[in-house]
Length: 120
Image (cartoon, rainbow, N blue to C red; front, side, top):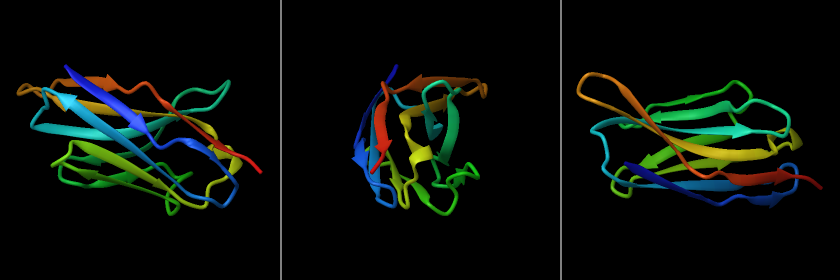
């Protein structure tokens, strides 16, 4: 089992910045990815960014160039640096850890979510 604890959400004005953190604990998988998703009111959960255990990032088009995902494997922690925030970035942000078994089967674990609100 893997437990995830997110932090860093809050209220910020448009154009501002926030940094989210997600710390993983428990039995880690050797091959894994970590990701951030978000869900706005009335909308489906969507992928924001992923990072492999070797540090390779990928971004949704709506955040590319504004958000940056990174990880510290010594701390089992993933970060999401969010700059130039817009009102449409308002959502609950969730951290996801995907560990792959020796057979390549994915095992997904989710954090509890942290609220990000962008408003003047």
